[in-house]
Image 1 (cartoon, helix red, strand yellow):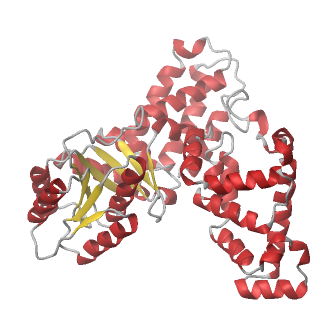
Image 2 (cartoon, helix red, strand yellow):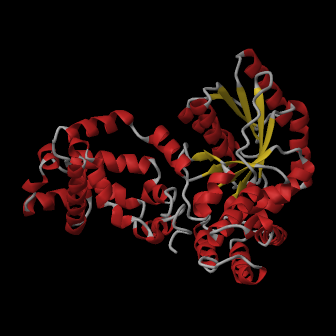
Image 3 (cartoon, one colour):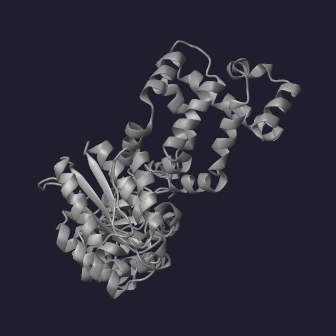
Length: 460
C-alpha cells in the first residue's frame, strides 16, 4: 500500500533539500509535485486542496523560518499534515459498555465484510482476550451464513445460527439474548450487503441499529475503490451513525487514496486495515506510523509488534543457542527462517517498515514473488535429513531426485544452496555474540545519506 505515492513524494521532497531557507517561491515546485502525487493516488480533490493549503501555510510561516535544515523541516510538516489528515492517533474500539458490546458491520457486497468480521473477532480474542460471538443477519445469501459459520469454527469463536427463512430483526434479538445469557463480551452482527446503495438496504440496517443500539457501527469498504470508498462511506454515514471505518484489500492498493480521503470526507476514523486473505490479516490503523511509512521513514513500532506476535520465540532462541555454540546453520534452520519470514508477511513487508528502506522494499517486491518461499520450502522438504544437515553431499543424482520430488528445477535448487551459504556466512559472524561484526558487514546496505533522521530525506 502507498508504494506509488511514496515514490512520487520522495521525488517531490528532494527538490527542497539543500535550500538555504524555505520561501514561498522555492516550495512552489515541491507543492505542485505533492499535489500531483496525491491526485495520482486517487485522493479526493477537496482533500488535496485542503492538504496543500495547510502545508503551504505552515511552511512559509514562522514555524520554519528559524530552522537550520529547511529540507528536514519541510518533510516534518508534510508528515504532520498527513497524520492530521488521517487522524491524530489510533482510535480503539469502544467496548466500555455493559456486555455484550455489540458491533454492527455495514458495507457493500464484495467489500470483504464477512471475512472482516472473522478477522476482527480473532483480533479481539487474541489481543484483548475477549469472548466473542458472531451472527449473520444476511438472509438474502445462504452462502454468507455458511461462510461465517466456517470462519467462526476456524477462529474458535462462538457462532449463533440463523436461517434465510427468518427476519433479520428476529435473528439479532435472539443472538443478543443468547450472548447475554452466556456472558459473551462482544457480539458481531454481519449484515446484508448490496451491489449499490439502495433505500431498502438502508432501511433494514437502520432497523437493526435501533434494535441493537450497538457500541460500534463499522463500515467495511474496499480500499482499491480509491476516493469512491470515501464517498460510499459518506453515503452510509449520512444514513447511519457510523463510529468508524475498516479498509480491506489494502495489500492490493498501491495508491492509498481511500486511506487519505476517508476521515476528511466522513469525519469518521479508520480503525483497522485488512491485508490479504489470511484470517490474521488485520492491523490497527495508526496514522502516525502510516505517515512515516508513506514518506520512507519506516514504521519500527509495527515491525516490533509483528515480531512479538508472529515470530516463534522458542525456535528463535533455539537457533540463537545453536549458533552461539558454534554449530552449523543447516538447511533445516534455513527452512524455519523462511517460515518465520512468511509469517511476518514476507521480505517486502518487513523492509517497508524499516527506516530508509522504502525503495528497497519496492525493489524486493518486484523481484520476489510470494510463491518463491513455497518453492524453497518444497525443495528442502524433498531432501533427506542428512542432506539438510550437510548440503555438501548433494551430487547430480541427489539433485535430480530432489527437484523431481519438489516439482522444481536444478536452477531453483542451486539458487537455494547459494542463498543458504550466504546466510551461513552471516550466522558465522554472529558466533559468540559478535553482533557488531554482522552490523559492520551490513553497513554497505544503508541507503545514501544514511536515511532519516540525521541525513535528510532517504535517498538524498
